[in-house]
Length: 235
Picture 1 (cartoon, helix red, strand yellow):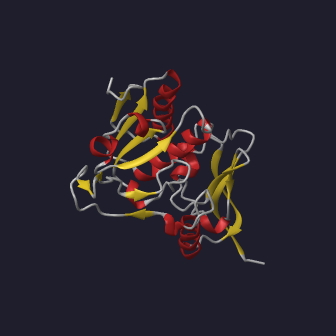
Picture 2: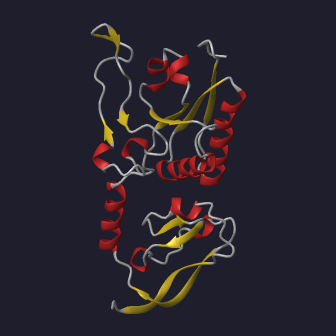
Picture 3: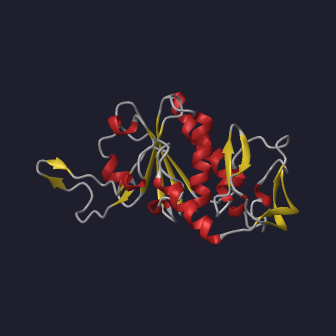
């Protein structure tokens, strides 16, 4: 049994918690996680008791209390964060998270085709870890699933030099995507966010998702919206 000491540590009032995820996205130690719709403290050793998450709970569900608890451990936190980064939501190893340099100009013809401007992997919002290095202070482009099929110059015009996230507001889990995007914004603090979506009504939900995620994250980021027509033109 681990020795406990009387110290300050977070307390979560589950009756007030609505599972918005603001606290989890702002906890640098990764001590908090949304489990079954409620914020949970994963381990007492991960919580430093400083309360950085307090101001990020719109429901007032998190407070700091003083009670017997396991001592905070920086070594445990470091190990925990490394373990979190090892596995993606799909179950893939973190080795699949890659950032690669593109040496040729975007759109340059390569062996009869057009060169990819993609600079990292993965790209699906569900699979990208919020702490992925290619997201930090980046210009992020949020692209609707159908856009690459309608707009042939996507790589040249929108991907070059940007981090890309792909999502569908109609077919994907909207609430889960909104929460994930808020976590990305909170962790990455990007320089800008460009939203590229189709002209069909359901696709405008991507813009709503992004603006709600920005509000939830508390991060101020310039937003640009680009609409693509079903015939491939910029509207």
